Length: 310
Image (cartoon, rainbow, N blue to C red; front, side):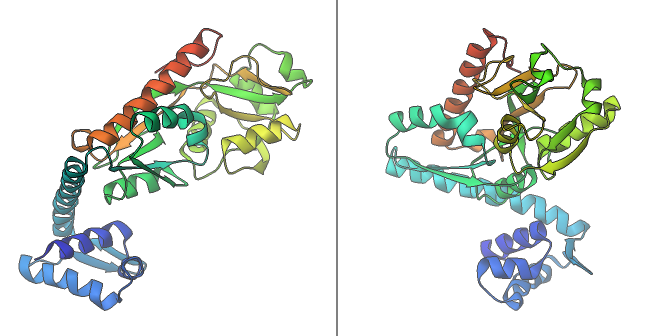
């Protein structure tokens, strides 16, 4: 049993496919299979069960998967921390973000961090969903992920930073733009620009609508919050989006107005990591810098009626 055997096995369990792992590793499916078979010979149990659309771990396979994944992640983290000790303040920090995360939550923090750690390499990886962020963290490909927080995820620690209230974005001059607030029930009669269906924020909004009995309609979908705000500003519809740090609510910018929808539960966002106590000093420093920047921005906005920190 080798470390490579365990790494390949963990990758197969996570992907649910031998062929997918073979493509990722640029090797043959047979080579991937040999790693798994060697583990099965040494453990004396079947570790994978073949299904029509791939493979899943057996009960014994899940035991080994959990132990191997935790061990590999800890070893990788230790090796990176050793590298930081050898190289000094010249390591790297790998962060997963959504399409608009850097702009709205990290811009100032990145400048501050760069000033403090000029030799550190910041690597940003854009993911289309929280699930993909969690998978990348579990695989050891990332240090940190900025996500919409939700239900517990096995092997992942989530740490809240801020709760974002929801607002209705409308073009200045729209009758709704003159209102001080929008009740959730009022949204039933409004055609809304739909948030990304595979996003946690979109799913959370849909769930809130369902719980409140709000039936909204939509004929336009977007890939991110910024596009939803742009279309609303152009008068092409209304959008319910999280109130982003630094934007004054109620109010807006130019021809866009943002009206609070206090009946909707706020959206919790923050950090996800494999293990906080295993983070490298540099990754922890970056996480703390972003957290401080966001909370300071929210505190400034509270003075003008914007979102509160969670």
